[in-house]
Length: 246
Image (cartoon, rainbow, N blue to C red):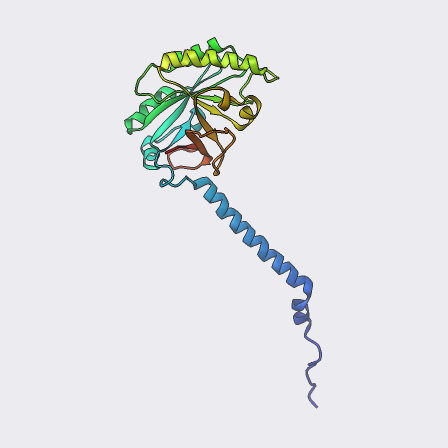
């Protein structure tokens, strides 16, 4: 008599597949895969994101020699209408790419401005001299931008408010006399929290925050670094992408 198959129990393979633990592991693996894919898409979007031109028709970059070689043709094709270039920092640092950057940007019809990274602890006169020695008096240049951040200092402690404001005012007066136009204050969130420069100094404000419009200045801004990590074919390193308030 033929042996009847055991219909009362599944085979061992079927039993193994049906175990709750295996199902849970498969679901977990699927979830991990979905998260990895979503994370990769999000990462790619973060590196390629630029604000909508409908909201901000004028856009550009802030570059320094840390960005390396720039293909100005490709940068212009990527939508950069202007370039701010770091010129100087503190009392003695000068950007080696500044002069070539000015020429390269202008060769593609882009407007150009100069940035000074302000040292909260260095003498104002020496900082102004460092900037005006490198940056020519040129009516076609955009207003100078002064980068101010808590981390931009050579002393261990942040200076007092009165001292800092006095030195900064001296610096601004000298730079504006040279440029023959008012500067733009590029204030970080940390320095604004400490010194409230946007409220105390009557200059246009340049703010920074990736992807979301910041409100820390407490009043309308003129320029915004909307991304500090944009990847473009024109440059081998991430660039800071900047928009102008319409």
